[in-house]
Amino acid sequence: MSNHRSLAAVLSSLAAFAAFPAYAQNISGRNGVSRVLLISVDGMHAADYLNCTAGGYCPNLASLGKSSVNYTRTSTSKPSDSFPGLMALVTGGSPKTVGAFYDVAYDRVLAPPQITTGNGVAGGTCTPNQPNGTTTEYEEGVDYDQTMVNGGGYYASVTDGGVLSINPARLPRDPYNNCAPVYPWNFIRTNTIYGVIHAAGGYTAWSDKHGVYAAVSGPTTASDTLASNLNDYYAPDINSNVIALPGVTTATGMACSPIPDNNNADWTSSFQNVQCYDQLKVNAILHQIDGKWHDGSHPAPVPTIFGMNFQAVSVGQKLIENGTKGGYLDAAGTPTASMKSEIMFVDAAVGQMVSELNNQGILNNTMIIVTAKHGQSPIDTNRFFPIPGHSGKNGSSPANVIQQYLPFSESPANPNGIGPTEDDISQLWLAHSTDLQSAVSLLQQNAASAGISQIYYGATLNQMFNAPGIPASPSPLPVSAPPTSGPDPRTPDIIVQPNVGVVYTGSTKKQSEHGGFAQDDTNVMLMVWKPNLAPATVTTFVETMQVAPTILKALGLDPNSLQAVKAEGTQVLPGLNLQ
Image (cartoon, rainbow, N blue to C red):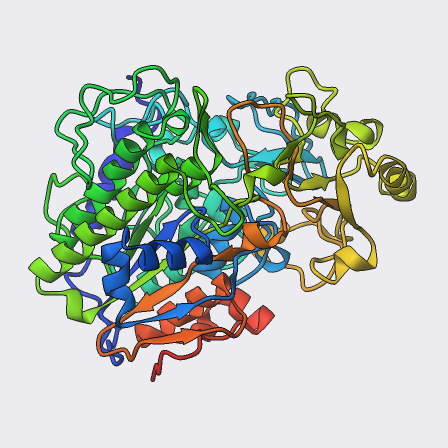
């Protein structure tokens, strides 16, 4: 394995670890909370939690629920993609303020990467001191080697992974900063709970599905290549090739060596293999609870803020594997056998974490939050309608309808490109804003074949986001100062919400997706457990971005130290009696 990042950088990171204080110096714990474990079960609807606890197949979540506040009307970010969904949880803000619209999106100011990404965002020229415009990718395609679990980064273990997996030559560049690569934590416009807690002397950790999700660190210095607000980050790549995991056994007792399902290219293609993948991150959490580095190799402080995302439920909802369907049997969310196994695995893994917290004697000063970055639509798989389609169903996606108006990097006419930003949503950035009315008219004319429910543009778009466009003074890059109004280089010109059940895909291996504004996409579980908390069910509307200020409040820190919380007036979650 080549040394992509210098060994000096790695040693510098370890030196920073060695110098870190032994405890959180400015964390008061005045709510009986010394640390927070944040868990995102990606795809987990509020209905999934209700069904599994009532049905008896989530005993660990049910046990937590007996002394938790459960929020039944929780909305995730809109769009309901993993990137804005995660950013909502850690910043307290929406894409309007934070600037994260999707893993793959577009920025009218940034310049293309130096070399083409693994998923097809073309490398190109960066012209200094003027807006360039490029598709932005913050997912596995920016790894050195996306086929490897460790992303091809400079790691001793093939199952490690994190910021060293990121190839800076595949990142978008800032034409107002000497065309330097924009690392994901500096792509984010506002600070995060990780930056606030780290500054207060807290020890910080997170585990996720791609190296780029070290974006939870939040903005640092332009020269920071290691996400310095994160003390311990672990991100084996979910889209890498499946390998055997000797010594790994899932929370439900499945051995991961040999490979349980050896007929699949990546972890998302198998109901079984994805559980082995998630268990890698579960084991990292268990090591951290035990006061160790994520791989268990050496001692470390127990984190003040830590957690992970689960992929098993999301995969279980979407996947059709060799004719076997995941997802649900009906509109009430009754899971198929394959889907139920994913939920049971996650429940058992959460049980492992709670048990280990108890074994270490720290459960009673830990807050546990279980929620989701996004849901999945449709729950009723009878409503699934793929476009351009298969099995006799057909149509044309919005991007195909107006492809002549799109930048080439966003156009489906680009034979080697990453493609447009479409799942069960279509986000459309135009090459020229003067084409807006022509593009909208064409979409309206093709609404039936494109499965269109709503078209957001103009005032209907601007009520949610900053108006699309290029700022009059784009230097410095808007990441350093989030715009409070338009024009915003990241806002799409048009967002199309399709009919419920429509997914813009030709794949025969999926039956649902996320990203859109539909109820099934956005209504996720949210449960908060903390010591001496009176159990309650809250039915008033809340949002996942309220998690961030709640975490700071619980730790005795100021929620208004989050820039997005101040900008958007995000409130602490109700019903928790935080002082």
